[in-house]
Structures are given as C-alpha cells and as structure tokens.
Image (cartoon, rainbow, N blue to C red; front, side):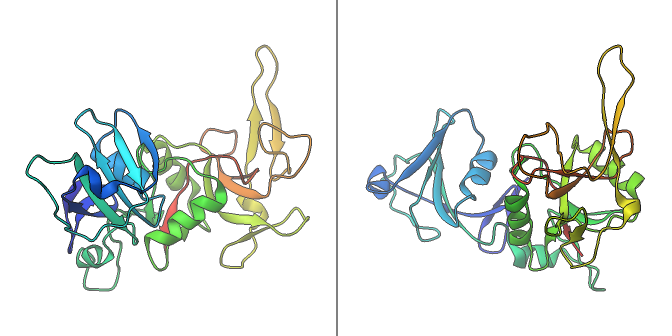
Length: 260
C-alpha cells in the first residue's frame, strides 16, 4: 500500500515525506543499521521504530536508517540523486487523511484498521509491519496508531476472532490483559477482570502419547521457565480450546490492535 496522504506519502502504514539528499546531508548522523534486500515500504516500517528518522533505499535495495531529522520536502539534490530517501515523524500514519476515510455517521474505522464482523475495528500487522513484539511494545505500537487505539480486549465471539486471525496467518496473538499482582486473575486494560469462561486450554502433542492438556491460566507459558510467571494474555488459534492463555510478557508474538 503506497499512496498520497495529507502532506506526505503513505508507505504502508507510515506517513513519510520525500527528501532529496546528497551524501553530505547525512554526515555526522548515526546510521543505526543497514538492512539488505528491502522494499521502500518495509524500510519505512523499520524506520518508524524511532520517533524521528531519515531512511533511504539504495539502488542495491539496502535500507539505511539514520537518526537525522530532515525537514519535509528538503531538496539539496545535485541532480545525480542520493538513493531514495524519506523522512518520517510521528504519527506513524496520516491521521488527518485517515479521518477522511471515515463515515459521516461517527462509526469511524480508519485505514489501516479494518471493520471485521463480530470482531470490531482491528488491525493485525502484516509480514513487514512489526509482525511480532513483546507485550509491552505491542501495546505501545497500538496506542501510537490512533488516539484511542490499544491492544484488543474483551472478545465476545471467539470463533469469529480466531477465524480472522487464522485468515491472517496469525497464531498465539497478544491481547490487552495482564496479571493482577501475584494472583491467578487477569485484568483487561480498561480495568475490568477477565472472566473464567474466557480461558482456553493449551495442548502439547508428543508422538505416540495422548495429548497433555493445561487449562489456563497456569503461570507457565510455553516453553516453561524455571523462574518467573507468565503475566500477559494471548488468544490461541491452534489449541484444544481457542480462547485465552497466559504467556511470558517478553515473548515476541503477533498482536491485535483495536479502536473501540
């Protein structure tokens, strides 16, 4: 997805501004890293990890990300061109342009969010847009995308939710709930308590042995650790009972964002 936004260019879900640079414009700035064999959309997604950055795609398809803060539409070209460069700053996508896509009746579900029947206004990352994050970073990502954005909470139709996630190729997806202290209870990000009927069953399969079932939550996560507890919740999509289970918060997992 690449199209014009209000004052910038949408590279996937990232609002960026094209700049014309010479090599000297980036002299003295930190090149955070170079990523090989990229597209400009994937390069933009990598660059958006910083609040402000300038990124370039070279003719050999290397993605260069720097901490340079360049004025939008800056032009210092000598006519020869210096890679294909953009500068980006938060918000991570053009919220003004997104609002133009909303209906006039107040039921707003702006791109890149999608209104999914019996699920809600949600966004599930694709292969290039931070497909896996820790629970804490996943929540920050969702919150940065829209003023009321957050990790998904309070599923009301698990078959519809699981079907949608499976269609996106997602499994074991972070949702917006964390453990309450050292108890075995969990709380949604809106302050309400996760009810017992929301929990699923984790199943391990060992060849030539009957399945081993672990009703959730069990504080263990997978794989289990000799220390610590699994204090964040995800939704299963390929288990014995596809509902909620606990997992260690630092695990890198897909996640589901929501606009209530």
